[in-house]
Image (cartoon, rainbow, N blue to C red; front, side):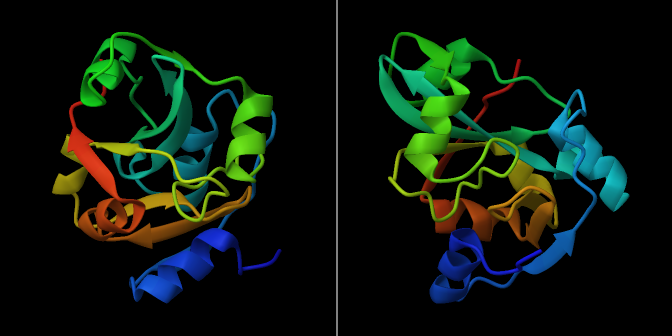
Length: 157
């Protein structure tokens, strides 16, 4: 497995300190984020999933703890919109340049607005997808938010 992805290159270019963690990716897992947390032996609240959605028809990225569900109402509100819905997987892959299960908020092909669950900023470190299936980057959540250009808002139900 390559440890260099667009996500890790972007973090390095920005001078963000991070640690790479490879794990056994299970494509049949009910929840990719929960499976990653279990494989890495860390609490699920610290493993953040990257979700691609649309708010009023415009693409956005939501970063939320893997043990929580994103609230579409809160997501729309975070971006000043009326309605939000999840993006189709094929559209998410085309927009980000990453495969589903490996989508990172860092180094996406096309930059879109990003929101991170505000509660996640309270952890000492969090894990986010490193740009490929089975690869997580561990970093300070505030560094993650800054690197992704994210706004911090309550996003979960």
